Structures are given as structure tokens and as C-alpha cells.
Image 1 (cartoon, helix red, strand yellow):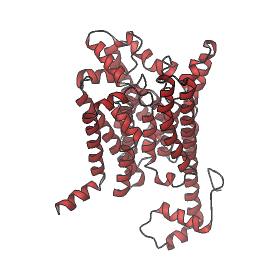
Image 2: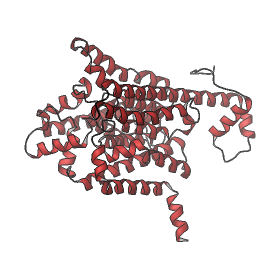
Image 3: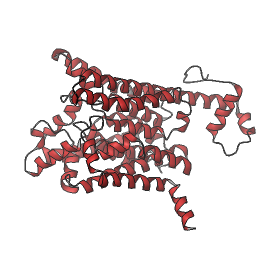
Image 4: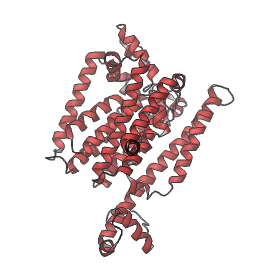
Length: 441
């Protein structure tokens, strides 16, 4: 009986979390040399997310000097305060616990997103969502590298989960916190407000104005605390670097090589173009997906993770984990095998070509940048595929509601979900969505 209870527990999402936690702690404590090696990988850490840079800033701050005056420390004062006064940045054990808890919190937030979206509790799906996130190599390696991307992901996912459950205050507080640490989550404010307006789970719908006022208040309060801690110098060294891209350390993004080769008199123009490339999608996506704000958030998270100025593989882990909460989208993708294969291809190419460039000296910067371009192109195509799949699902639902009501009522498969029934009916009739449309009329 005891063995059966243990096996049943391991088959739940709690068992998956326990295994994922044990794996992380075992690697942190038993393979510390691996963790230290991963800290230096440009695919996992950037100057804005590196634990080594954060330790240096804490060391300078503890000796009474403002770390932002040196021009090489870019972390948010929130992380500087947390690893100075709450957790010791120099403690391998306590930082390992912190990063492990962050990944666990992210996985639980994903389960809450799935439950709020589906309206049911499906143990098999919850186990799959948890396993896909905790055992994703991008997630695991980012955690072992102690990149602050893992902490950013935990904050952002809990903000999304809170909004999906109609909890306006926690959602706005967490989103303002995520905006302070990495700035780009500010782009998710419009779909987050739409999600809070749409949800029926809160006792009373929160108005748009009250949500915005709460966000602005929390944002201003955090800014005030940061100014008290590090005066105004942190603004130029955190948000300023994200916007102006003054540090051109190689990463998996599209920016660093482009602006290394850019003439100074063209730099301002192309900075505007690149930053607008993130901003320009917000309004059209929110308008087109106004009936499904969670899908709008998914698409925007994918765009941010691909086109932000200092991306890491951990940003793609966030998007992939969130995608697991949309099984109907995954089942309608056009080229999932191609996307997955190219991701595996780039996961080999990135460290290999970086080594050829900087370690053996048999290559140059073009080698590594070529791999980042393949990574970025594949990620962009994946976002387009997800957007298309979401629109196809919507068309299928609308068409089924109009023409196939009797077929659904006569369907004998009681255990299947509505989406599975819809897909089966479409396949049986030989139908397919040949174009995207906002309405069937």
C-alpha cells in the first residue's frame, strides 16, 4: 500500500516538482564546477542577468560605494537589495535554494494559468506542463547558471497567473516588479488589463482605471525605493542600457553584432527601429485577440523573448512553458517538428561556434552571429505559427458552433474535450481552415 501511495504521489504534479527540485539541488551541490562554468555562457547570462556581475555589485555596495557609478553594473536595485540584505550573494547554498524555488514557483504559476484557462483540473495535463517547464534544458541550465532570467520568469508568470484568476492587486504589483527588473514586461500591461476585465472569477470586475492607477502607484513606489538606495544613477545603468544597448557583449539576440558594426551617425535611428519592433505589435495583437487576452500574452511573450535587446535561452523557456498551457494551439501548429529540430540544431551550434571564435581562434564573430540569426529566425517563425494556430482554432470553434451543433450533440465520445471532438469532426468532413478571418459572416 505504501508503495502504491508513493507511486500515485509521483504521478501527480507535486511528484514532478519534487523530482525537479531534487535534481536542481543535486546538481547545485554535487556539480558546483558545472554551475560555475555555466555562469560564463553568453547563451544563458548577459551582463544584465549574470550572477557574477550581481556578486560584484553587491561586493561594491557592501563597501559603501555606489556600484552604478562604475558603468559596468546593470542589475536592478531590487536584486542588489535582495542579495545584499536578504540572501547572501556569496553563498552558493542559499542562492541555489532561491533559484530552485523560483523555478518551482514558475511551474505552479503555469498550472494556475492552465486551470484558469481550461476551467478544469486535469492531473495528466498538469504533470505534462510541470515536466515540460522544469525539465526543459533551457530552464534547467538557466537555473544552474543562476541567471536572474529565472527570477524574472517567476515574477512574470505569477503576474499572469494572478491576472488569469482575477486577482488585480497581486497581478499589478508583480507586473510592476517585473518591469523594474527587466523593463520589457511593460508591454504586457494592455493584455493583462484586458485579462483582468474579462475574468469572471473575481467577486467584482476591476475597472481599467483602477488597475492602471494601482500599477502606476506600485511602479512609482518601487522607483522611489530604488532612488533611496542608489540615487538616480540606476536609471541610466539599468533601463538606459536596455534601451540604448551600450554594452555589446555577445548574446543570443540580434542586437549586439548589428550595433558593433553600426556607424555612430546611424545608431540612434536603428535603435529606434529595433525598439519599435517590440512595441509596434502590442496594439494590433491586443485588438485582434481581444476575445482571448491570454493568447495575446503568449504571442507578446514570444516576441519579447526573441527581439528584446539582451535575450537569453531562459526567455525562450518562459515562452515554451506558457505554450504548454495551450494544447489546442499546439495540436494546430503547422510545423512543430521543424521548430523543435532547429532549436536542437542551434543548441549545438551556439556553444560550438562561440568556442571556435573565442577559444580556438579558428573562427570570427560572424560564426557565432550566424547561429544567433538561425535561432532568432526560428523563434520568429514559431511565434507566427502559434499566432496562426490560435486563429485557426477560433475559426474552427465558430464554424462548428454554426454548422455542426447536431454532430457534437450526437457524438458518442463522452471523455473527449470539446476541442478534441471539433478536431475529429473537421477531419471526418475533410474541412480545413484555408484563410484567417475575424468573422464567419
